[in-house]
Image (cartoon, each protein chain N blue to C red):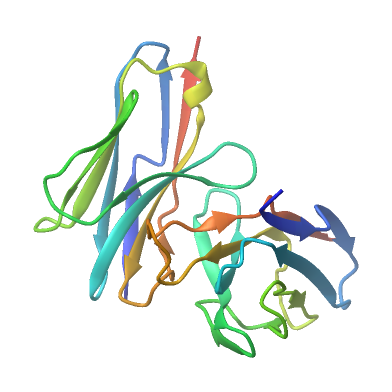
Length: 116
Length: 111
């Protein structure tokens, strides 16, 4: 099946620990994104990558890091420097210049991180 | 600073009612406005709007954009319990695929 796979779906971590969230896609989309969602809030952009080996900070990049070594993969590391990491994390992809280009983002099912 | 504001933040109606959700925006170099429905986890795409005055319609849902007044509305007629969800509005500036999201409207439809 074509799609976006995020893992793990649920993750618990102790304060001071780094954790890496996985995002894998087989849609052959060029661009990938990480969003954070808090209760009652919209989606806020953490990092995005429009091409392999290149990525840009979004609006709330502090305390996070990413890599884009392969087109299919865009892992997000939540570091101990992130002061309030408990949230729902969504990975998304976008086909740059694809036809028909609806402008639509495709989302994974999300990863819920809880810091104990 | 780019901004997307949705209203109301929460709405409770009974089945059969018609609802209107609002989205206003301030974005540099506007490209498109998108509506998503989020029931539990992943948002699902509803509409993309790029031109003023052209209504997009899908079943009981419809949406329209006013680029002069910088807002969009999402209408749902004859609501059903399955319409209960968070409806997200997002605006795409000229940087392709980088969306700014509003806080969403939590719609609850009672039987």
